[in-house]
Length: 160
Image (cartoon, rainbow, N blue to C red; front, side):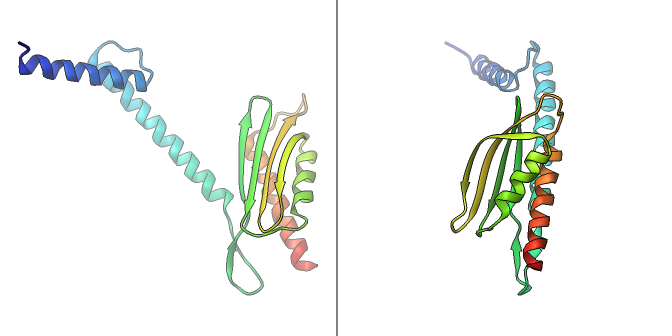
């Protein structure tokens, strides 16, 4: 018959092995597995913080002519192996915005290889862009350029 202590030790061992596999730790000792898990949790916290920062920098409030607050289109740029996936979404239709965004992507040296666009009641753009060979562009640069395109589009719309 298995004693309570042996059962508890077996359960603890199983849980440590599960923790080891989740954190992709190669450690063998219990304390090293726990240290690796702690480091893994810290990495996850940093990733969450960076994602939250990205969310707050890509959703910027705007005031329209009636002084009601609406939000600018949301921008999300994901770096792929050879290019970017650019997602832009707005809860309202944005006539002319597509041209502005595509022009900026071209100016950056990104070739739009595939795009899905919806401009009926809302605006949604999902574009896959490949970089020119000599271009070394990061996702932040693409995000800022698309934001500038939206800003310029908005200003030209207000003036027109």
